[in-house]
Image 1 (cartoon, rainbow, N blue to C red):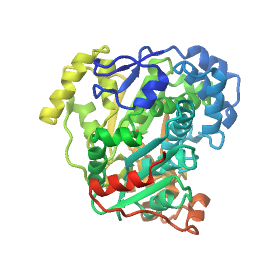
Image 2 (image 1 turned 30 degrees about the horizontal axis):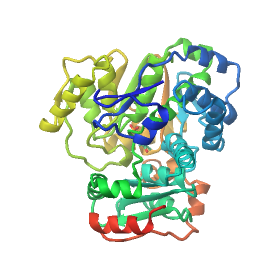
Image 3 (image 1 turned 180 degrees about the vertical axis):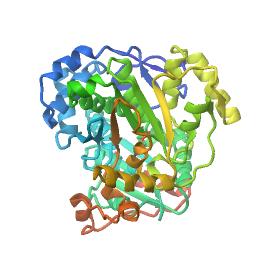
Image 4 (image 1 turned 60 degrees about the vertical axis):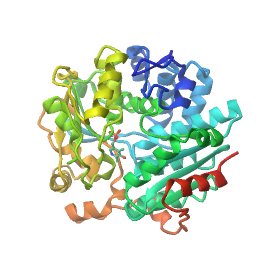
Length: 457
Ligand SMILES: *Cc1c(COP(=O)(O)O)cnc(C)c1O
């Protein structure tokens, strides 16, 4: 299996090379050259009862369809290392509504499904090539801590994560700064998330530096993250009863960068039965506007109760665009150029699988109201991101709401809505530990010097 760039100007690569590249040289994102039919894979797994062991096997069988650089045994071992310690249970709320809980991994958010695997793939790559890697990224919360926990204590890789001082939640900061791992360097920056992101971008275009330290990114466009996220859609399906399946399945997905819901749609294109994907945004409603009007026009970001969905551009959307344009890389590249020039796109002439996608928008007041209503109606405590999935439960299909973070990560919003203060032992344990972070300064040159001095060699 080869992977093609969405902009059509870079040579197709195998799985390991596409993984290592992250972004294609032409600026595009890698997409599998074909979407394999997973019907027989699903049928094989019908016989197994859902458990972490069957999750690992399912993930390995799925990856074997895409990764021809590792043997099936190597893939199984990578998946065992990545997933044995957590599960994705489907919790029933009532006859037609279930929640797929994706927050039982090390950092209590769904990003662990992609980033645990990415961590093990990096380790494997370093072992095979003998070249060390230095990962640099900026975070407003969940991605940074999931990346840190995917890579902590791995040989040959050091991780530098920039975050804006005082702008990530205290628990998220502790998740990043209390690992005790000597290869992890959390860096606190004066300024906003955009300032941190800007430093990272400046350092990635410094090609000499990039080469010198073997700089790698760990962002949501990495192919392995998207494929890693396909697996839990299959696993959710396997946990449904025949009666539930007979009603049609609607997946409701709290959405920011479009990575999670894209994975669901790709799985559908491979044969997963689904009647609808609901793109559930918060007040930063770029994608809600796209799916309701056909116009893709970012506004400015307004910080919300669901911070991991506070986005300006939905990077993974380019993959949908490319596939919906019949894999026309030239056309995709032209549209992305038009987007760079005008900061908006008129896509009213394109049909984004309109029959399968719908969208909802949930502002902060509605997040509080949904949180309260979920507790009252279902006795369920939802985190503020997951709360966005509760906005429209009127369809007759069986609804699967994707729960993307543990409520214990956002106790104050939940307390405000329900009076209940959720906790989690993993987070409580962090309160005993000593945070370690670095403050090399807040401009690119200072951060560069720090990375050079502490790079894995
Ligand atoms: C990242 C994140 C999201 C958004 O996921 P995308 O793949 O960016 O659409 C939703 N909820 C939580 C808790 C997250 O961390």
